[in-house]
Length: 270
Image 1 (cartoon, one colour):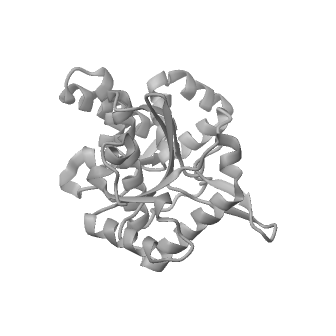
Image 2 (cartoon, rainbow, N blue to C red; image 1 turned 120 degrees about the vertical axis):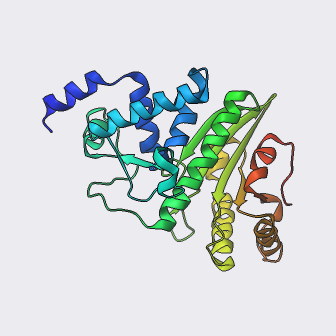
């Protein structure tokens, strides 16, 4: 596409189109239903009207090659258009560059991602959408919600080398007069426990640098969101049994209870 083509495309896009494109870029992958909940449900009177408007918009953006869909659908073929998983298409890449917005994934040559990557990325997005909905509904004030790589934290190791901590999400909420900072890890129960413990150790090492505290005056709690209560309990027990890890820094919960932890209605484990 030429510069004039991109300019013409940009002129045809609405503010909501651009907001949808930015979110697909931010989250790397979003399902149709997630996009509908973020951008259409709040402004349409019924779920059916919201779904129709969302599908029309996404079809138009796909026809313009701004967005594309994976071959794999969430829920399989029977899920229909609601199961589509969307990513930034080639025209969308050019559009982001024209807006001086570097692509979050740095992608150029697209390849169908692995099933594990899709499931994990969509699970992170689902949690983020739930948090955004809770903020919109007044459960808390959502001050910041950062996805990868914006959530990443760089610091220097004791050997002077750069090390990067890579939370799935960084969240800042306000409830009353108090701010709450969270690093969130979305666990799919696919990693062995030593891998989980290494990531917990990385959080302890980053806390020891004092870098985050110097900017914000506190260090976030680390929340592991797990598919089941049994998995959450297993991570909690492993953290408690590992020398050098502070159990008070880490909370674990099953996915359905994560909003209760974030709002303070539930403490999680521990």
